Image (cartoon, rainbow, N blue to C red; front, top):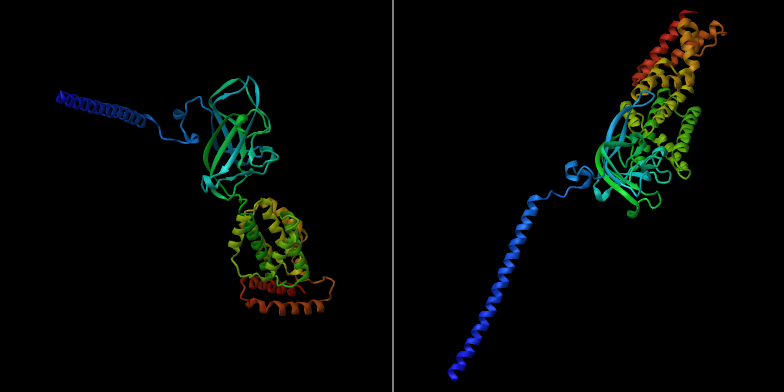
Length: 427
């Protein structure tokens, strides 16, 4: 009996252990089955899903033809005045779901400069109010409301909604830029960027090249432009040997003053005037004219700045009196060519400043003696003896300069010596 009890107790323990082992085995089997199923599902998922592609760069097949999308196409178009300009054409496609038919929505686009990476994105600014929000220069879009014709509107083809001239945009820097366009169609203009106000939105990445000076480069670019113009001005003054001439100094200072009043804010004008005057006093004049012209052209933010620069050179020439020659005019003409100025427009500036002198040169071709008298500074009413004495003085002045180290000065002196000799033969 005692042995039976021990057997029964042993049997109970054995059955208890077997039950526990069974439960453990069952749990392991279930766990393995679940794990196996999960692994298979995961494998199937990895085999069928597409990589995570940003929405703006997905293809039509990846997005589905009915999803709202945008793209920006760079086009070169002809304007009404027959000029070719680059424009950014914003196009949309896909489904727009509005609260009702003929819904007056608002469409706006922002351009971000992504060249330095998404963490360093910067706004691209529009300087023309016809193409941007009047209070926020980086919010672009048509001025008229964007009407959604149907409650469920589907654009099956790419449709152009907004064209923006590239010349209207100011980037952080010039050169090749990576741009992200972000377009929102919203219920109203209030709280425009509130998600609850958005009907649809999309973005698109593209690249453009711009030569326009960026807003982060403005200060340095202005300085290079001004310094290059003033260097050429000083080279011109040296050419005419007018260093220290009060009238010429006034011309330069007036140009500096006008430049500052046009470009700089009121609080900066005096400081910038002082900077340019100091630079004019210490600048060296033995610099490459081709490099200077290239720097002026590269750093002129607007076309009229190039003409403003040449106007200074013409003003200096206008105040040089009889020291100015046809060779000197040719020197300024060559600068205008290097700056790629419109010939007709430049000639208008030239005749405005030097019209009387140019007319005198034309008459001199018909009457060499009259022309020589104007160039040499001789009064036709002088008696012959006085004219001869004056010619001797001029010869004494110009003869030593014929051996000058400056080639331009030598040519000028040779021209004057020939003119003196020709006029002497007419007496």
